[in-house]
Length: 229
Length: 349
Image (cartoon, rainbow over all chains, first blue to last red):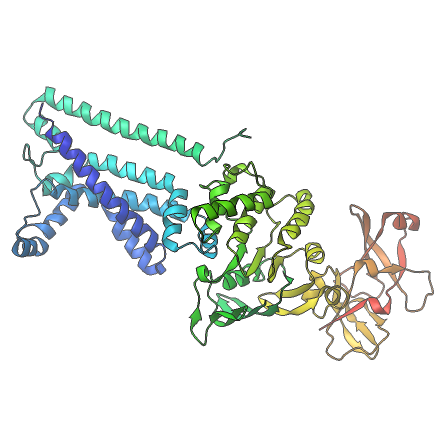
């Protein structure tokens, strides 16, 4: 069994999760501070990928990044890079699809943050960036962690947009999900089932990790810990 | 050491207009809830920006709308004790306090930490998280953290509102002990006149966003000038009044009360404290008859609601408060002859 699809899926999911982690937090933090109208519009635009079929996202990305389309042609002409049908093309697709998961959970976490904690940090003379990374983020870590893991799990399972923009080339762009489809198409049931089991176990492990992390988090913050005199 | 505040801010329908000056003293900001006390503190700390005005701390301009000065909170050196203490929940007591220590090498910081833990009697709690502390302990940590940051003014926002009342008394004593060595203005925001009376010498009254001047406690409790000041000082009976020479006419109760001195023409209301409503024998000069409408037993006193004989319909009842024994001696009367000493009538503008 060639393990390339596993490796490729993991690296695409990991890289897009890292990108979306920062982009989602950044967007969640700054959009909350914008005027209501702008906020409303941006909120809709950034959440759309959550409800759009991945094929629609793939189509829109192809319209933008295809070798004959605006951005794709420009990149090809100036940098001589073709941004579709490579293994890392899948990162664009995956990042767009998982972005709303990170953005919405981070926003929810930030909204429940007690702003007086930031104020008290400021009056104590602590720099704003310090307050962000050492006070706000740790307080919101449960939500942000959940968002990150969810985004990663979803990235592993991305199929529609990825297959359109990266295609299926064995040993080059194949991911677990596209491999399963391909194997099913070619009636290679036994191997397809193997990959299905691989995918199932990874997803189960990821979700189990979230649960464990949450429980540990609970103890560290001392929220409901009792009897420690 | 002094803090000068002259600020205005419009927020929706609410207009904040506050002016006062505090020296090295504990100045109370007294007002009903929602009158802009916390907003004033936030403007001083730099968390909120006033529309107009000036804030000057020890000669340092923190905010000046005309000169375009608006220092960030980090540079203001304002110690702010928030209502919920705002301790960082993911950090231990030790780390929380270290957040307040701004400068020094690691060794110096640790020395300062040890001294602070000792001074605030927090030894043994260093490794605990805020959620594992009692309300009083949390307050001590918050105060320790603030004092470590060497502020030039301290703002206390309803310091006991988050605590059970039976704890308050003890903590109040402790708080004033901890603040004793602080040489700078302390603003104590409160809606509790008892707390203010025990801890402050001067009071700035806030009513619906507007400051009504700064008074000494004596002035506030013996000669409050405005309705808001009278209410905040605990005066329960306040009615419309019309000056009449050295007396006031109270149309709601159909009464004219002798004030013993000329009444200024701008007096609009009169206040009578419930404790100053006296029962007197029939026929006493200036006494008036009231029917007893309701009797309420309070913890140590009896509160009697009286309707003066000439009261208009819908007029508020006159509230009298007396010792339980004194009330028992009166033997459930249907009506009483009442008098108020001229000096006990508060003339309000």
